[in-house]
Length: 180
Image (tube, rainbow, N blue to C red; front, side):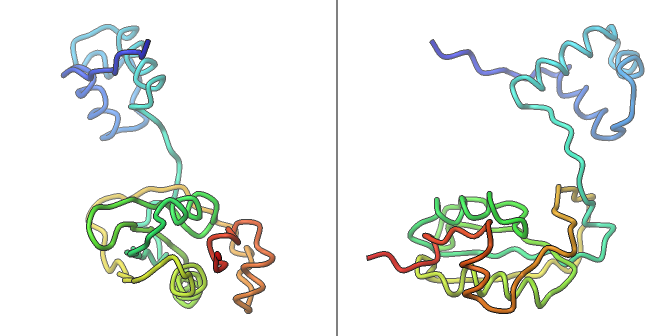
């Protein structure tokens, strides 16, 4: 029997709104603001964590860095392969399956625009499963935009496309090879 989906109520939404405004606020202060007990706040947060509605995720605030953020829209016959590649590649922050002609969007960030172009060329433009590629560079970010990111500046991206594909533990070789 499938467990009933958790339904947030107005108290849960109040708690989450307060925490989003001030992530360091104590349960006691939240309880005072919503006129509930501290244990109630703690139990509700615990339940929301258990069902995956509430998480704390440290990361880079791209609004306050000099990292270049790009969105790459892809038209592909194999969106699941691109999504899997994004799960493994340390240069790809996330990927989204979309409706429409461009059916996958990949989010990338790096301090070096040339490196981003190379990643896009190696993984998407040279990929027989990808029919179209459109890249958009983010020029400004309105609100905080925080995501985890591999910050190892020494992480290699080889000078040879084949070397990257053949030697990179993160590349999905079967995605990039022509299948018979």
